[in-house]
Image (cartoon, rainbow, N blue to C red; front, side, top):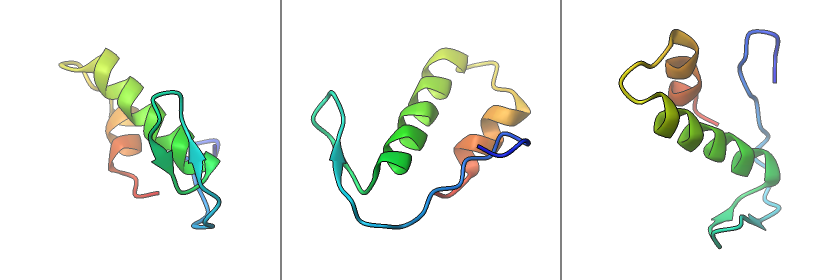
Length: 59
């Protein structure tokens, strides 16, 4: 992550599978997607600016 909280991932194709069995294009993308899910799930209804920035960031 960057100091401003943004996560930047490469587009390399190195597939990984998470605990639920879903495949992601690489480990960084998997972490970013899981973090987005976590933020939406636990901050629904009171999203912060940082949450919106992370959710809106295309990785």
